[in-house]
Amino acid sequence: MTNDENSPQRIMQMLTITLMNQKGGAGKTTVARALLSAADARGLSCAFIDADQTGGLTKWAMRSAERGLWSDAIDAFQTVDASEVEEIVDEIIEDGKTYLLIIDTAGDASQDHDIFAAVADLVICPIMLSQSDIETSRGTANYVYRMRARAEDPSLLPEFRIVLNRVSTRPSKGDQELIEAMHSKKLIGDDEDNPVEAMKIVGAVLQEREAYKIMDREGLLGRVLTRHNETALAFAKNPKHLSNALFEADQLLTACLEIAGAGSAEQ
Ligand SMILES: Nc1ncnc2c1ncn2[C@@H]1O[C@H](COP(=O)(O)OP(=O)(O)OP(=O)(O)O)[C@@H](O)[C@H]1O
Ligand SMILES: [Mg+2]
Image 1 (cartoon, protein in one colour):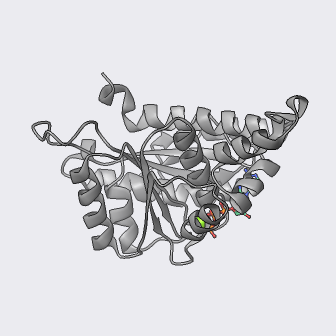
Image 2 (image 1 turned 180 degrees about the vertical axis):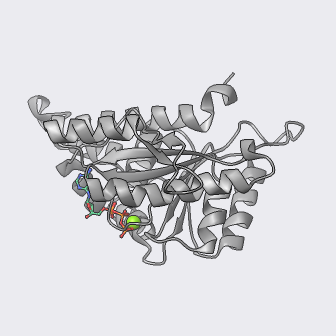
C-alpha cells in the first residue's frame, strides 16, 4: 500500500496481509488469529476484515471480548463485498492509526478474491504438508501469479507466499522431501503445464499445537498467557505450551512483515 507522505495524520505505512487458499480448512483463520495475537502482544495497532461469510474471525473476536481476552485497539470489520473491502481499506489508511491489517477470506476463488488480493502487500496461503495441499496451493499461487502478469504495474501487486501450518514437531523424511520438492521444482506460472517459478515459502511455520485451539476457544494468545500468569503459582507461570506458540506466532509475524515491506517502512 502507498501512503500520501504529506498527510500529517499518517504516522506510518500500513501493511496488509490477505489469507487465501482455495482449499478450505488449511489454516487461514488460524494464521490470521496467530498474527493478530503476535501483533497485539507487540502492542502494534491492528485491524481485520473478515471476508468469509461464515464469520469465523468475527465470532472469535466476540468470544474473546466476552472473556476479556480481546483488545479494543483491534478494529474489526466483516464484509464479503469487495467494494466495501476497498472502502474500509481506504478509511483505515486515511485514519493513519493502523499498522497491520489482516484480511481473512473464504476457502474458494471468486472475482472478489481479486480485490482481496490486490489491496494486500502480501498474500499468504497456509497449507498442511501433503501432496494434495501442495497441488491445491498451486492453484492459488498461479492465480496470484496471473494477476501479476496481467497488471500494468506488477510492483503494486502483492507478494505471494506459502506458510506451512500444522507442521509436525518431528517432521518425517517424507515431509522433508515435500519441502525440498516445493523449493526446487517449478510449480507456478501463467500456464500450469509450463510453470516458471518454484513456490516461495515463508521461513517461519506454525506447528500443530493445542495452544492454537486454546486461542480459538478463548482469545488473543498473549492475553490468554497473561490471564494464566495472574493466578498461576510462580513455578507454573509462562507454561511452555502457550509461550512457545506465542513465540512461534511472533516469528511468523516478523517474517511476514519483512516480506510485506516493513523493512522499508521502518527506515
Ligand atoms: N497449527 C494448528 N494447530 C492445531 N490446530 C489447528 C492448526 N491450524 C488449524 N487448526 C485447526 O484446524 C481447523 C481448521 O483451521 P482453520 O479454521 O484455520 O482453517 P481455514 O483455512 O480458515 O478454514 P476455512 O476455509 O473453512 O475458513 C480448526 O479447527 C483449527 O483450530
Ligand atoms: Mg477460515
